[in-house]
Length: 179
Image 1: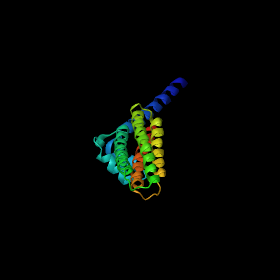
Image 2: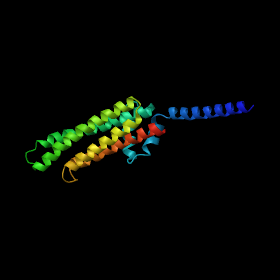
Image 3: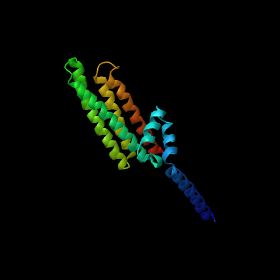
Image 4: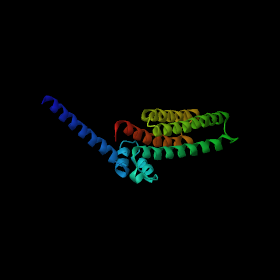
């Protein structure tokens, strides 16, 4: 009789766990987006980015991560384009040109780290995704630090990059800990 009681408890625990897993799997699209975005520093930006992504209406955590990574990668490309166009300006002081050259290199690193983040998510290596995202955030910090001053166009645009990466960080944490 005692052995049967153990099996009943085990069965009950399995049913509870399966129910919780099914709840996590069922949460998709708008409901999931709202849950994720409430934990981000810029809720409005998060909602805009994630709801505008293709397939967001029924998206899973992984799909939302890809949507936010795409937005971050586009932002990084835009910043890189600006850096490349400013680097050739002969009117800039040499220290600013050098800072732009350094920034260009770290932005290229950040783009590579975003690609590594995508690969980690596709490989279901959620913790690795967080590591690569943090590396991309460190790269944009290095870029900002390499250019004197903090009121330039690149500094303002890098804020957007950070916010987009932080959306993906929130999604990645939810992938690890559950939504």
